[in-house]
Amino acid sequence: MSQLNIELFIARRIFRSQKTSRRFSESIVSFAVFGIAFGLFVMLLSIAVVTGFKKEIRNKVIGFGSHIQLVNFDSNASYETVPVLKHQPWLSSVSQLPGVKNIQVFATKPGIIKTADEIHGIVVKGVGADFDWSFFKENLVEGSVFTVSDSVRSDDVLISKQVAMLLKLKVGDPLYTYFLNEESKEQKMRKFKISGIFSTSLEEFDRLFVLADIGQVQKLNNWTSDQVSGFEISISDFSQLASLTQQVRRITVKYSKDDEAVIRPVAITSKYPQIFDWLNLLDMNVWVILGLIILVAGFNMVSGLLILMLERTTMIGVLKALGAPNWSIRKVFIYISTFLILRGMLWGNLAAFAFFLIQKQFGLFTLDPTAYYLNTVPINVEIFPIVLLNLGTIFVTLLMLLVPSWYVTKIDPDKAIRFD
Image (cartoon, rainbow, N blue to C red; front, side, top):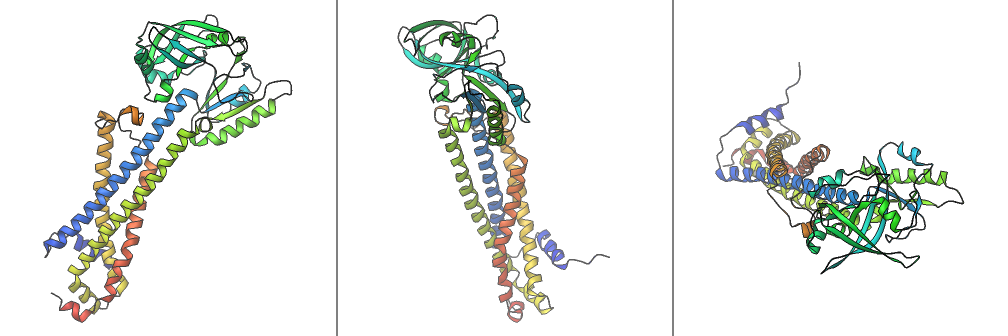
């Protein structure tokens, strides 16, 4: 027969009792429960919004350049690249790496768009038949993407909504572009046709990139059909980026020859360090917010526990007179506090998940895309961080309650029984 946990039994009786002799203590305890609920709600909201913001911005940057780019070692940071051969012996080995989703070729060429009234600098990014259009299809606001064929070059291009508004262009309009060949110093003009307009709200990229057939860029650069700027690799798990970059580097080095161009892999985090360093700074803000809120919620529960013990001073004296040790009496109040914390956490979780559902479904809270790169407040819900946050909240809060529960040892049974 299992032994009765007398401390838990007493705590349950006190917790379930709806009667209280002091309205003041009831309001203090209720406020402590509300503090736990509101604090957890804000913490869950902070994690969901910050991780959602980081994920959305990261995916947009990756949409323009994939996770890993493989380019000629002699290429610099500009978009005037040194070509590499399209058919590489290491392609099959890299494509078979666990976590690699897609490998596609690309070519870039800087130039300008000229209209009757405006001039705007751009980078034409040439894409091939193997290009993954999913990102641009999600962000397409007008028109359609074009089809790339190995046999016939397409004159269609995709431009951003910002460029279209700046230059007063629309789907179906001609796009007059001008390019300078650095070797021959020859100026070239190309007339494209706008097939679609996209908008990612990532202004730095939207204003820069124009998507075109890779054959057009090869012709502008005086390259053969077997020459490209490089390769883009998409992976399934961003956390494996560093590991996969190292594996790709080892494979390309293994196949490198003295008489051929050296190819180097560049992770997207290295290509745009200013963006990813900024995103990483957001983690520090989250940790500060979580720490402050847990401390505030913990102090609320400390005050609630002290009020509960003052209210039950007579009961503490009786238990001591009956021979109950101090630790057993402290456990009674820690159990009561645990029940109150769990009640607050339940309401906090319910409120947070209700907010997440409403925001994801209706997008009630909007943002200025020029400042935040997003139209609505992003929400990213992951079970593991939520469970970890709940466990951390109850652990830290209970740890803080061990100190005020020590007050039980200072209560004298004789005075406590006569306490009014």
